[in-house]
Amino acid sequence: MTRNVRCGLIQCSNPINDEQRPVAEIQKAMLDRHLPFIDEAGKRGVQILCLQEIFNGPYFCPSQDQRWYDAAEPVPGPMTSLMAQYAKKYEMVIVVPVYERESAGVYYNTAAVIDADGSYLGKYRKNHIPHTSGFWEKYFFKPGNLGYPVFETRYAKVGVYICYDRHFPEGARLLGLNGAEIVFNPSATVAGLSQYLWKLEQPAHAVANGYFMGCSNRVGSEGPWNIGKFYGTSYFVDPRGQILAEASEDRDELVVADLNLDMIEEVRRTWQFYRDRRPETYDDMCELLP
Image (cartoon, rainbow, N blue to C red; front, side, top):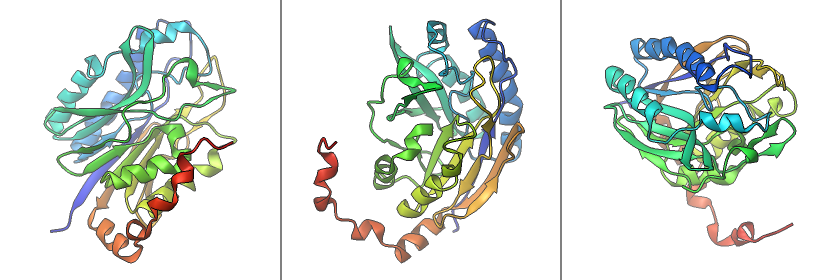
């Protein structure tokens, strides 16, 4: 029997571009903007849905303002509990990227994975943390410490990579070695320096590792920081590097694609990258080189 899985990505803009409004008010507005798209996904038969990076808030990392620590919450916690209700209602796996508070002063950029029965399967913490103009993430996030887990959901084996992670092929390979069939990369990335990489790196990961990727990005500009336009274009790509479905650059949107997971076996029988890799020759990669 063919293993077809219907998957979805939601890209949304921030409805409140006023940093001085209460953090909880901004978070509620972002959640309210997403909920109709989550319902739409359920009604369209989406089986695995991924939300964008820190979906229930703005991308606040252009600032270095302590007040955004108030946006963090435990994982599992209130937001995973709410998303579990939707997952159970629609029998839909949901990848839920949020700002995680582990303990006082310890915060992570995290994505929880909720199975189709509403059960919490676990979380991935973003491993690669940028710290450069407009992206002061080390002020807000501690580097992840959970490795590269793969979650056995009802419909597929799912891995998560978050935004800046996508520039690092090592973790993408480890997700494949750990059994991922679909890797989701929820992002918040703006036009300019890295936009040309958006459709180079992730199709390359899909090809090099023989799995599907779902790549989401928010849309619009967020004040008062205005570091650039979040250019959307969320998309799915197959193990041959072909784009299966793509969203617009400037519209809140749900993009849906049907993934034939049987293609993974077919592609890997043609391109035997896992058979032919030579891990015993890669020791230098683990050394502290300049």
